[in-house]
Length: 101
Image (tube, rainbow, N blue to C red; front, top):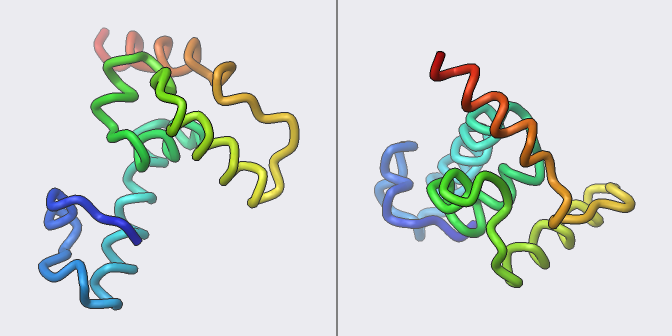
């Protein structure tokens, strides 16, 4: 998996070690799913563009690469009719508001 240096927070010391890489990548994806309340589109966008970009944009960032990535992966896992530009941005904003009050 492609991991950024911050993957050390998931126990990855050597991204070239296959076991560390896979375990760290899975831990990161699990964290993203938890962080975005199970929203697969937002979690995938976070993996591709970074969770801070998703938070900053309040949903899937308007990056062509990220939209294409999210839609491609959703199709591969069996999702039909998913449109990255119509993700659950409202759901994300409501949860952010609820968690700050």
